Image (cartoon, rainbow, N blue to C red):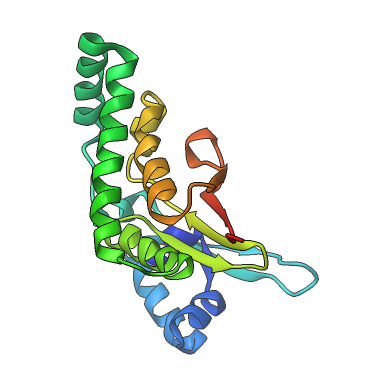
Amino acid sequence: MAALRGRHGASAFDLAREFGLSPNAIRQQLVILERDSLVAGRSVRRGKTKPTVEYTLTAEAEKFFPQRYDRMLNAVLREVRASGGDVAVRELFASMGRRSASRLNAQFGEKSTGERVAELTAHLRESGVEADFEQGEAGYTIREHTCPYAKTVGEHPEVCGVIHTIMSEVVSPGVVQTESLATGGAECRFEITNRT
């Protein structure tokens, strides 16, 4: 279910490759999930091949993922903004980002940029974010496929300041965000160029 959530949908063949299982073994699991109304399948055509069934999570499946109490967070941030203004909200998240970055830097020690990218991606996954990374010729790309604060960012975009500070202080000061879930993108994508 987490793989389907991160991918926003996949076929039995896609999931078989990811988990190192046969497509039939995956289909058996998908049949059970579909019976329980947790996934829904639909026929899609990918290129010139015959149609394949692609599965996505249903709204019912979301109950199995952590709830982040977005309403309470929004209410708290409205109060912070009302009493201290936009500056107070920005500083709140910048401070949280600096504290997290300091803790991660101490944990990562003298690791290389590539090792830090891998460690940070693992840390994001442990925090409930569906994330992965890849290395290319120019450097690294970290992708967040889900955002636990998606219902808060629309009203309080400063929330993203935490991850921006962490990326900058833990991985590279030159990190660039090229796509954002908060602005309607399919993912949050961060590009880290190799240091020369």
